[in-house]
Length: 411
Image (cartoon, rainbow, N blue to C red; front, side):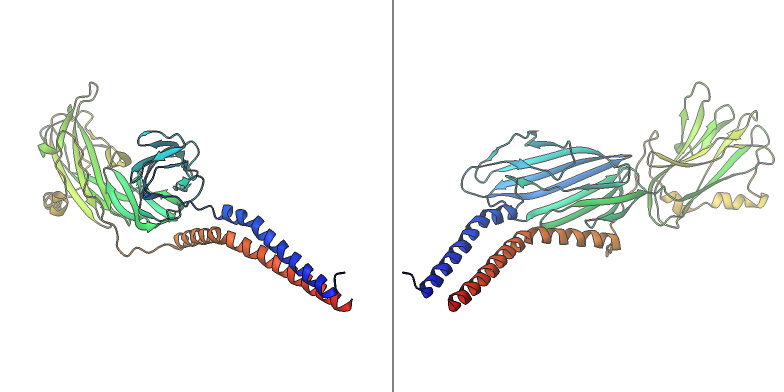
């Protein structure tokens, strides 16, 4: 017959066995929640290029993977954080899982997608999953480059710190780079702002055939950003004008209906508040329908604004009789800033140097903070769940132990 003391000991052993059983059951659960890849394949480089034109963003992500182990690795490669419909390639051919990577070998995974960004925002997660699990090592090199066809684009908020690299090849460029990091969420919002340019055109009196038309054009950057690759065009009809000067700034537009001489001026760049003045002249050959056509202003290839056409007569002069000296003076600084033009070829000015010491906006700080918080919460959720279950088991075991102990004493 079992004594009361022996009965209590047996019950304690049963509780201990139950606790051990629970631990065995939840161990696989904990490992599945953690979901970190433990193999030998690592991501050496993650390069993201985003080109935004109008309402479309074209994304190209290149992920360089390396097998650091001593044997062949076969695994499934997925990129679920990219936009839906993303095309994925391995070494420039369609990706088909599973992928086999030889020891010490490197493969390139390329993701290509196009998304609608009508609302001026983009959000995706450019990371690689190994057998459905996240990488357990940092990426050696992580770079992001964002190019906008609208050169007046400004970043409103971003989950990564994008440096302003100015304008190159008629595109506004922003970039980010870091080493030994875990690539995270790319969440960018922007706004396109047209360049704030003030342009005026003035001319002297032209009354008869043989008079010399003298035109002065002033342009000023009233905005807060440097503007590059500005183009000015003004057309003089050949039926009214000839001998346009400076000859190097004019080219013949052979239009069957209205042939003209086109004045073309390319301005490499204008800093905020900077003004430039240019002038040209032409000989009047006929006063019939004599006029100046619209002066047009472009930023790169995008039309910005125009100066209205003007009929030329004795009342059309904007320059007083004593203003001849002002016309001839001009601004040497403006003249010296012009790139050479060959047969209308446009030459962009130098790219803008990134501003140093740029600070994160409040929105950027909040985005980064939320991202880091989310990453930390995901990385610790398994530990919290396991700790909670263990706590419950210990508490239940303790309560049962006290109950059985009390009951044994009473018996």
